[in-house]
Length: 263
Image (cartoon, rainbow, N blue to C red; front, side):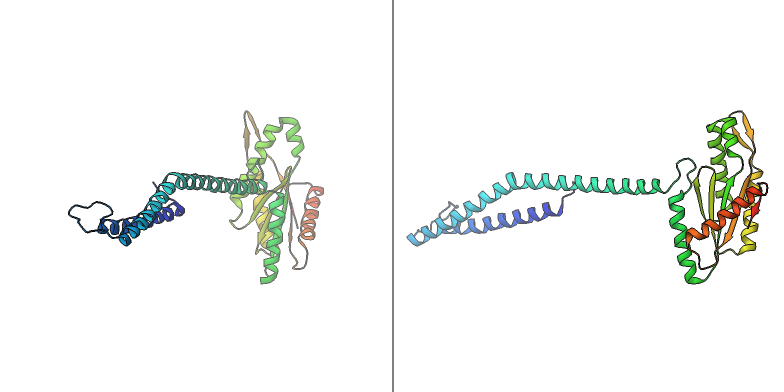
């Protein structure tokens, strides 16, 4: 059984009281006020008065011991248990808060980061890479004709398509890239330390990987394609401006026939 620090301090206090009581009782035996075998010392009035005073002090100490053990300690024990319970509740609430915060940053369908996380991460990357003067690449990706998939096969199949695409994106990106689902069938990848040529090749590998996917959902087998707009940060743009530039490249890819990369 483990004791709280307050309980240990209380036990030390009780031990001191008990020791004080023993120290006061000993002179009573020496004076003969309390019977002790072989004790035949004659008592004077002064000795009796002293003995009575010591006996009263000892009685008060014994009363304090009894009061502490049977009244104060139970109250202290209850408070310690309540404190431990409150600490557990606070820890549980803290963990729950962290879980809720994580959930607020995660897309429930695909398990990817969501738009809220993406916005914050993009700003942080630009802030840091402005300091070290290194490039940051951005891809905005959108599945082609996804509404037709939902209308033809149903939303369950559409959800499986999104999960499969998300898994493919995770497999083809690096551990320090930020991969997020922005909403609907739109995704984004922040690819730090990539210039225009490297980013275009990276995006093309992702586009090809998506086009080669065979997605199975029940007895349905289908393939999908993805259009990608890419941009490399110019070192001066705000995050919103940078995103809009990549987004314009995405719409250009859509206009030019889909299933392509535009930079």
